[in-house]
Amino acid sequence: MSTPLWRPLPSVRATDSITALAAADGLALAGSAAGLWLREQEQPWRRLDLAATEIQAIAFGETSQTIVAGAGNAVDLSRDGGATWERSEVDTSGRVTALGLAGSIVVAGTDRDGAFISLNGGKLWSRSGLEGQMVLAVCGDKLAGTDQGLWLREAATKWRKLSVEAVVTALARTEGAIVAGTEEQGLWRSTDEGASWQRCPGVEEGINAISASRRLVVAGTSVGRLYQSADGGASWQELPALPTAVMSLAVDGERVLAGTYRAGLFELRADAWQPANEGLESTNVLDMLWTPDGLLLVAMDGLRRLAGSEWMDVEGPAELRAAALDPGGKLLTATAEGVFAAGEHIADIPEVTLLRCASNGDLAALTEEALHLRLGGKWAELPRSERERTIDVVFSPSYPEDEGLLLVTLRQGTRTSVVRYAPKSQEVDRLFDYDARSRWLAVALPPDYRVDPRRPAGFFAGTGGSLFRPAWPGDHWERDILHDPDAVALSLALSPRFAEDRTVAAGTTSGAILTHNGGLLWMTMDDGLGDRRCLKMVYAPDGRLFCLTPTRVYELG
Image 1 (spheres, rainbow, N blue to C red):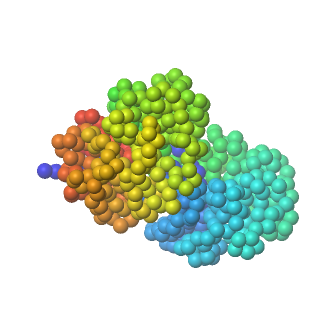
Image 2: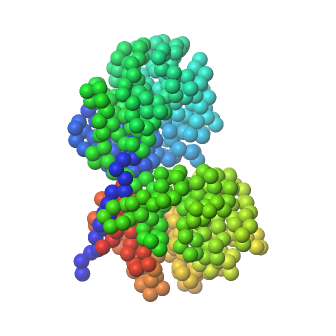
């Protein structure tokens, strides 16, 4: 019998946001929601083999062989031009947003916890000050721009504030000068290593990105306008505009690349911007759901449904944050305006990051501040604890009879749990608890699952490099270790005929695996996967299996 093969479905989007760029010695690197991409000279872009998605920062070292990239709370470092990588994690609940290198010193800025420093090339990290600040830019290992100004590092944890009193969004070093971009005061320039700063005439807009090579400096704004200086920032001329906000820039010699918001990548050629997206792919979706009308992708810029050989836009709210299905198959959505059911406003809860619906219509809506529960038509609120953060919510198939409202939580950095919160009795039972040095836990509940705190092992779980299957009579789990030592479990899905075929699909950072006997034996199922980062596995009612990756959606044939 032939091995099933994954088939790529049509590309989801033609262009995506380019959140980070760097270029040196003829090499260019681009970061997007889909990961890290490399281009050599005029060749198409190719994705580098990194698990990381949502790349926010890229920097070269003294040569193009040394590269650092930041995504989430991790920093990936390569010393061979991107061929191999080493990953280290920064002790932050935020995201790495800026990186700078000088020799073996690496400085990482975060969006909520200030700066971190590594003195040994990214192997070990320690806090470096600027606590509570959003670090938006780093230049080398001494200069940082934050939401509270411009700072010079004088010691490992000591920073001195410089004279630029503004939100500093971008920094670049050019021959004989340093140029700083600000949110509301345009561009600033220093010719004495930051001791004094002068406004750059002619550029008054909010700056998103700056890049420089020798004396050539390019700056991009939040409205798509760009400016160029050929004399190290002393004077500026406007370039042709781009269709959306400039999110990133890279200058290497005379070559200029610009990354935009949702409109992709552009290269400046003969004083005109030309699209430069060949080879780039991205799904950039929040969720993938099976609905009565078929496979649905939920993205911040709208809904897309697979229709034959292409993804079609579906009418719905803009700027989506989360989605779910009610018991009748109708779509529930969350936007900046609140929560909606089939277009009808049902809750004024902004910035929801996760929606879940029980079989009786009860709802869970998670925000940064609280877990909001609609129980029997009435809303209640559970404040989120900083000591133990809820990262997912699952309703038991037997809810509400078993009061099976399950909270997937994270505490102590990497310890994940499943906690039953009983809405009526207010009882709390910790059903699963394990530290796999991972910040995520995937859970799948059998269709006959019913919460029993005395015999908690009734569901499947995956965290870090481990998978857990329930062992009869339900008083403990059996743990299986993923074959790839670098793999991390991301998602679990049970076959719609699980009671008969005992099939479970698991998605990891290194591919898909399947079991047909309830987890006694797992098989690698990677043939045809061009991208093995399996973010979510979804079964259709007829047994078809779909895999969402950062670059494509695949169907197992």
